[in-house]
Amino acid sequence: MTSTTITAARLLGAFDPGTPEWTAARSGLVVTATEAAVLVGLSPWRSPLSLWHDKVGTVPAEEVVPTAAMRWGTRLEPVIATAYAEAHPELLVHETGTWANTARDWQRATPDRIITPAHGGPPMLLEIKTSRYGDGWGEAGTDQIPIAYRCQVVWQLDTLGLDTAHVVVLVAGQDYREYTVIRDPAEATFLRDKAAAFLDSVRAGTPPPLDGHPATYRTVQRLPGAVEDRVANIAPDVAETYRQALMAFRRAEETKRAASVAVLSAMGTARRAEAAGRKVATRSTRDDGSTRALIPHPQLITEDLAA
Image 1 (cartoon, one colour):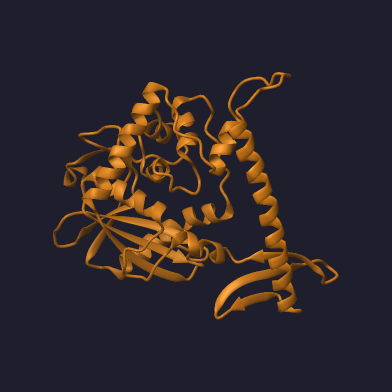
Image 2 (cartoon, helix red, strand yellow):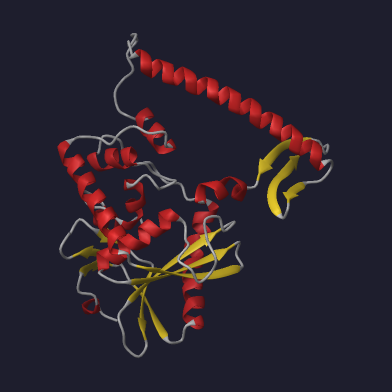
């Protein structure tokens, strides 16, 4: 497959992550596919405010230290791509690079692979993921993928002017699943308009509203400027909101502690707890066998968030 197969975007190049060329293709007043979910507040990793300060340059981008899951996800990507190709001999799987939309140069995307029918037909995208627990992933064969990934895929399709993306996830290192996402013009327009408005706010120097995202808190902490030994008179409503949040947090801690006591008591000497087939928690222990901590199963928390 050549880049001429895709006419709505131009191939900037195939860059290794972390290289100056890779950074340059993603820097400045552009929006990449991984940033699409950030702009609408649906990214678990970044917030609109943290991205805004990154684009403006007031706060250096946070250094991302790859976790074990991230490192293994990168290592497994070609393995999963090969498995997909073996499962679909009717398709050709192509490595690709970073693309820019021809009408909107600021709209960028770096899909994992591009696939084409062996006997002719329009190109499609292949996105490859790994997941430890499968939280947010629906039944295989549907389009039910985590919302942040859906934003990413819709953005990629809109950037390259394609209609179909196949998404593959390997759950827990053994559960292989395939999903299909069809480009929704309304979703694509919504994300595109949000991105254009965001870039306008960067040019105008108008930051997004504050929110409770962890990335927003880290960004505000890292804003430049030496601390002055003085008293700031803040608005009473700001102080009262802070006080109420502290009280609510204390009550939530007490409620959680009581619930943890109840679970530990119900577990007896068991290491893991389930309820009606749903995984609840795991007990970590000290050398003497006593309980160190009760660790909730991640999916117990993400079930409501994904609903």
